[in-house]
Image (tube, rainbow, N blue to C red; front, side, top):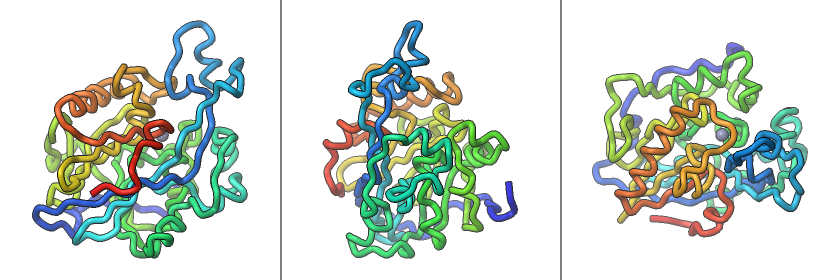
Length: 301
Ligand SMILES: [Zn+2]
């Protein structure tokens, strides 16, 4: 890794929390990709692997998948993002930001310049420099592409994710170094540390602001250091699952994706999410499910 990025351990709680706070949630669609269904929902059988990368699959059997980010408004901590979606330049010329691998994987991407997160925020009267905190579920290119747009923010992600993303062969695992190689304020969460508590059905959780409004819960498996985020809305909770579940079928039927960094960990994280779903009346948002995305409201409070 070059010298630009020097993450430090997060000092918990992060500043800005206030007792009893609830947050508002605004789902932001950053673009729509298209890919073989079997990539997201694994098939069985001899041709499953080929089908997952689109070989022998009619383009009519490709599915639309949302590439997303979330705006969270906290009454005292201010404007917070979960993931950053796609960089504005991707709408015009994807290669420079996404690189060769990312451009190939998002070959059928549809994105308008005004869908980039900074433009989405501007449309709501929020300047990109108002974003104080960016919580990254993981550092895959379709979540981290827009990180450079928020130089004034503090970013939090897990130590395990940073280590995975900055390995020399990280590019083979869906990471694009230029997305996170900035001298920004990066803070590492360590789910092995003693600050970690359990929450609801999750064995490992971190109350980021110390007021219970935003909790990171550890859901590794999709990547080595993946985490999901639980938000306290006024009357219920929302779980931003990230890629711990691509689609609702993973949640309801346990349908696994084709590619997982660690299938054992993925299954364990999935079990925790399924139990959470069984026991709470929470809004659960999967990472790449177009039908589920279309049912979301523009705003939750
Ligand atoms: Zn991912």
